[in-house]
Image 1: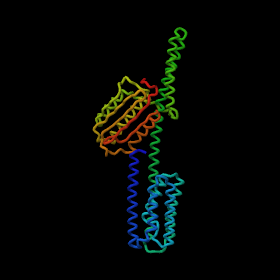
Image 2: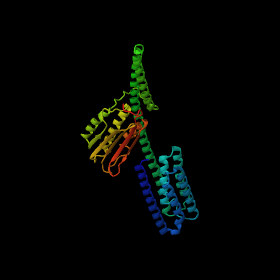
Image 3: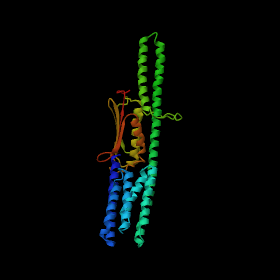
Image 4: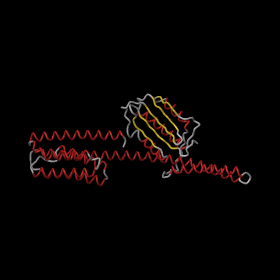
Length: 380
């Protein structure tokens, strides 16, 4: 989970805690004014306990829901036996709705159905336990039923939204794997073709010039080693043979990409190694695609940015590419609409044995940083 997601979760929990506190206070005041303060003690303690479980639901959704329903059921029985106000009260009804909605959204279908039914059973038990009284109890029971229906509806809607987001992210990952597999297939085919040519040449000159044949064998060995490295990166990936392989973009085309972006977005400064330095083809194309995706996200979501820096650096063992902008920190960055491209980039980078980090910079702006290993330790 990213830092932003954690902060959002903390903020949501804090807001829910405030809502619970307000509901508990209002319920206590209402019962104190109509029944007397002492009539709220048992129901109030149960409400506080269920609200606490609702706040802790992320740790164990099943058992927090079971515990909450058990406490609510006991509160219904106690209210019936000791002639206390109808339970579940508003505060407990809100907490139970959170538990039901959370279970419906996240848990496996069977568990979600069982827990939703348990929540409805609590409402049904309250209906059976209530004595014939003025309109007050019926209003409370109606509120419980509406809270349960709302929880199930919201839980199902969020579950559907989560499933769509997960399916979209998985499609991006799958498409990126297939595209990378095509590229690596072409790389390996290139090396094998070279090996065949050198092997044929070695056969022709072996009798007349053994020394030149040895050089050809060394070239075959080097090409075979590189082909094996490329094949290791493609293990586990599937290739759609009906699609035409895409053309790889060389590092010299980064300047063209940056120039094109300069005509329609913030000013971009490119810091890159000499164009004569080359990398393995799969690394070359990945660097290009990361820069393109990062600049596209700047154009979509950081139009207030004044400048962007694209920095590409090389060490003996890796290539590092970073794209940073200076957009205000308040600039929204949609988690999914602009994020699926980064999902695909992360899949590609991790398949090559690298890492990709994307997130806000200290102060202002956004950064996308990727590190890609070069396994032979030297530029090619």
